[in-house]
Length: 222
Image (cartoon, rainbow, N blue to C red; front, side):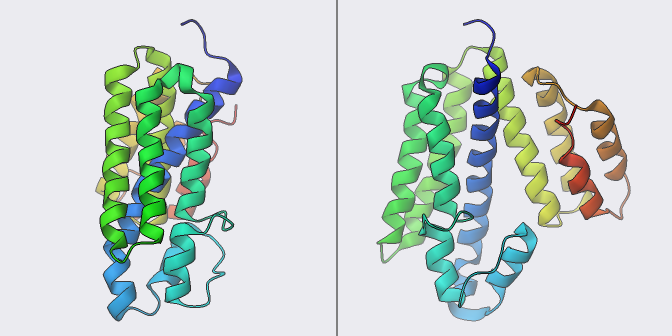
């Protein structure tokens, strides 16, 4: 396979981002599920604040249902997974049928959770399938740049979410350091000035999260 078209590169990048977004938010959702059910009345409010999504939910029960499984909610887990799946379908020739299959199985697991009395068990299967998806990317995709673009998207999304979740400076620097080599492997036109500025913002123990997020948002603005 030769050079990747601009359209395919964009889809690969966003497949990486959506896959990571679903993986990380699924873990947060599962970790907070018992708290939302038994204890915390405002856990879902804090999730909305951290992700900067509109709080359109009437209650914690409404959030549990709609944020997880409502296809009409553009910020829901299933909506993000469907966007990843749509990209994967178009990229079947680039990523392979087996790799695509793990996204399909993750989607099936989330759909199963919506009608289950034990939803967290199905959601954990979705997490496992997303991990298997990335394992298959490494095992089945030979094209260096295809893997690079997808993994760059994955690492950008992880750092984005870690900044929103106010992770520790150590975790943020670790996420940045894992993103940096992927930015080179992707062969995308990276804004290296923004990358350098972001690195500087993450050096101290007091992080300006909003400024760092804004800077991360510029790394492909060239």
